[in-house]
Length: 136
Image (tube, rainbow, N blue to C red; front, side, top):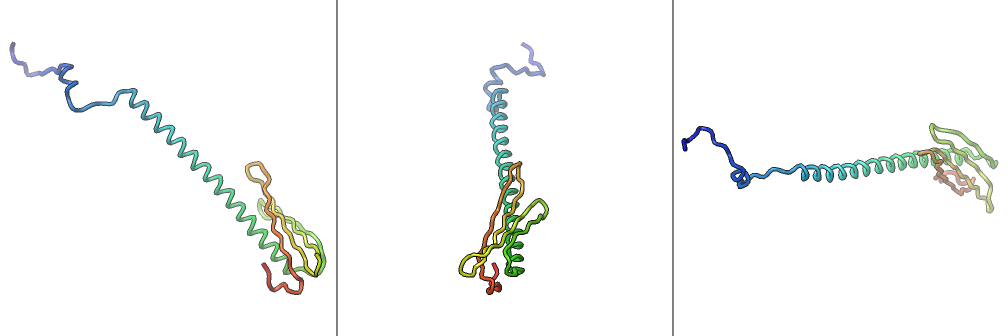
């Protein structure tokens, strides 16, 4: 048989080589596992973002309540009453009522909407009118 410049590889020579390629099924299984993992990670980030947003709004509501309550105590003139107002997406209602033993109860309720639900934060403080220097 004459020797040719071109060598044709037989199927036996290919299967005995050390390099092995991935089959289509293996690639599809790997891509499916990767896709499921990525969906889980994205879902986790989305949930964390929602929780963080809710915590931020609660923090702003608490700061608003503290500020308005401190102002109401500082301006207390001996008369019980109520007031309300709004600050951005937050609405608040404050009430001041006389209690026994010369104490006064100041309460504020801050409300806002979050993901379609109404959220509420309430803060109350008892104080003695003659001792308003020790504000909250």
